[in-house]
Image (spheres, protein in one colour):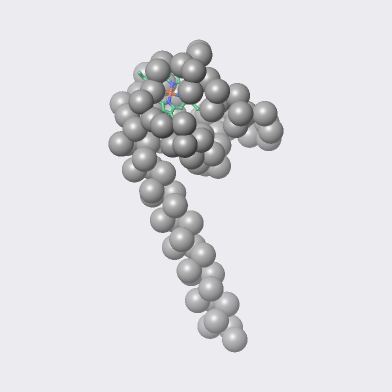
Length: 94
Ligand code: HEC
């Protein structure tokens, strides 16, 4: 029984890591990492800084998706609307 719980926890952990990796790859392929890094400021703030800034702000996701989609207060990005949603969700979950 115990090993079953350990196994289940492992599977969940690996799946979560897989999603995080996929999103990082998406950020790279969408050009976000030209201006953003995970931990350090480049042209734009670090993804982890952005997550900290908006922690607990329920309106952040909608606001950021809109800013990125319409290039308002943010440089234009080439990601699709779907990808922008995914990337903002991922960013805020960091
Ligand atoms: C040409 C450079 C550039 C690219 C490419 C870029 N960003 Fe940014 N980003 C910036 C700058 C500069 C800021 C800071 C602007 C500000 O303070 O509002 C920023 C801010 C942000 C913010 C925080 C906005 C806020 O209101 O605090 C998010 C979220 C973000 N970027 C996500 C992304 C994502 C996701 C991508 C890829 C689809 C991306 N960025 C691509 C330059 C860029």
